[in-house]
Image 1: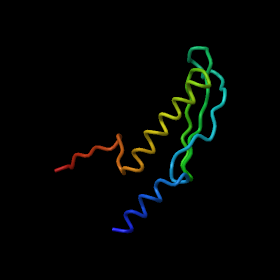
Image 2: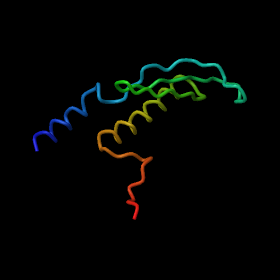
Image 3: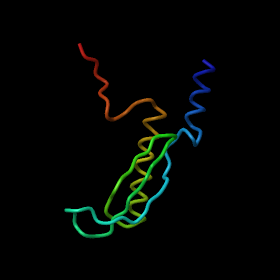
Image 4: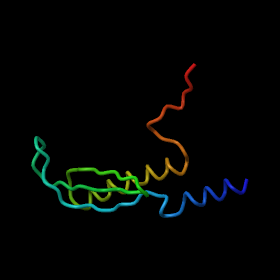
Length: 89
């Protein structure tokens, strides 16, 4: 039982959670409406997620924080919204 507690504690350490590496202004992607665009990079260890979103710096940062919250929640609970929990027969 101790090892489970230790693993839970390890998962909550900052290096085991996603974080925002950067949010920066970006060029409008080809074929998309002209406006204010920002790219963002989320990291956790060797994992990297890059995104591109229209909106102000504040709005895109809030979006990135929301994505991180969901990723970290799924990571610490050991489940994913992208994997079916139904067993095949």
